Length: 391
Length: 134
Image (cartoon, rainbow over all chains, first blue to last red; front, side, top):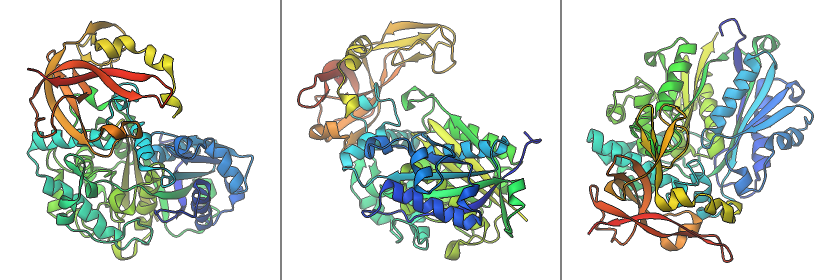
């Protein structure tokens, strides 16, 4: 691996996460793509391949074949393009594919886009779409919703470690605090723990304000090789120093311990090793907190806390922008929003903003190493990326 | 939804779903539901088909209040992971019980019930639910 080429992020772009009634799936991914290309200083004619991360366009829009569609709608038909799907990890896995494409030497310049358009659908239909991340034939068949699966994890976690819901639910409060300063966030306003705990239950014990909202959005990155980078005048260079994807036993009920996502453990170990970093080296972190309890579990599985103690990092203030482990500093899934297939790209977009020193009021002091963790299903697939600032 | 309009899709699962057929790995001993020829734990391809026990205990449960569309008229309803008496974990709905009565550790037994209907002209999908053991 070491003999192969290095891969850099040279352009970033994103739409606001919102209920975009006036914008279609293709409008959103086109907008994010063109912003990222413009940011890179390259021309769209430089793009040799496109990877689109998306979960549910076939079910929600009746539209598949997003690779060719986007290539045409940004005016570069002819290049290689494909959609990548891995449930909520579609964005992260698309980025992994884009990384491999440049790393391999086949392409010098690749566009990776995450997109999801959720508000075209009725709530029940969206619930149908999201539970497709689990086994349709034997699990979704029972009427389990995706939230219900995470409720099981929540129950197991509280039972095993004696953690209190108030301490776990605080993750939502944390996210909203930082979303308030993120112009692209879906819910840029602070909330209180009392509001979270008094919001209605969706699938007990999970309350509404513990769940990431549904919304529309798209984020994009332009990746290029070191050779291509030579033609650009970026002061700050961002290298993808580690990129890993891992899977776990598909269905939650077949795993030995539902309170650990083994795919996170495996992907993190691999990505950290590729980047030659340890957990203590991480300056800014993005975790996939689709539900508060999962955010807590991710902190543990990524190696930042002992099992059962992830919530303590929240309580001790370590996840704040001036703490030891600034986490979800642009609002996380809960408050930036979670347009499913786009989330993995939003996370790396935000890591890049921090490493470039462009995170505004949420800027972490001088970060050099950022990590993003993107989860599909209840951990059936996990992508972990390590991004380093190189001067 | 296209995936809800298939008769053979339901028919071919009749043994596993109506009789609660699982597998036991001849290499690592893992017991699992549903049956398949490959063990999900160790990857071994030598798996024995077994009829799982008909009683068990509720390990965790939740109440679905925001259901998938085809379950809309049933909400709120209880779904659980039931630890069967041989140790196999199975996801299923809990029937014939008030929401307030369900608890972890509740003893339950299987019962064949309606799960969902394939639209106005489609067939009815049945499957195993659990009810309190009397």
